[in-house]
Image 1 (tube, rainbow, N blue to C red):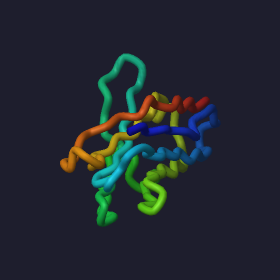
Image 2: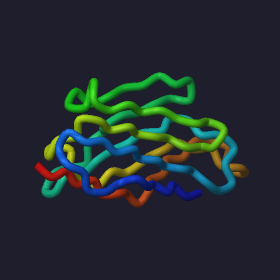
Image 3: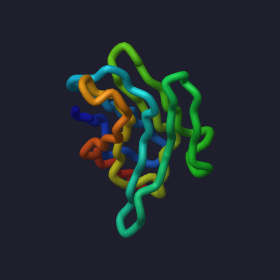
Length: 120
């Protein structure tokens, strides 16, 4: 199983970016999918998460600016990021609980991350 994230880049403060992360491989089902970020010199933190039933949760710092969504048919999770601030700088990682054919219980996977840079 692989999680491939894309969509990071350089944007001016106040701008927007949309991240995508697709899970691929011998997948039976994908449960929770989340986005984390790690700023320079800081610990990785949860940004937003969504369940297979489309419940969502957000870090307080991004509420009202970021929106997480998913396309279950494509095993893909998105993160729409608006009104970006320099504080949003970091490497963004997707994370998912996936049931793989032959294992039949959820296992946790990480993507490699995509860099988001916001210029002030």
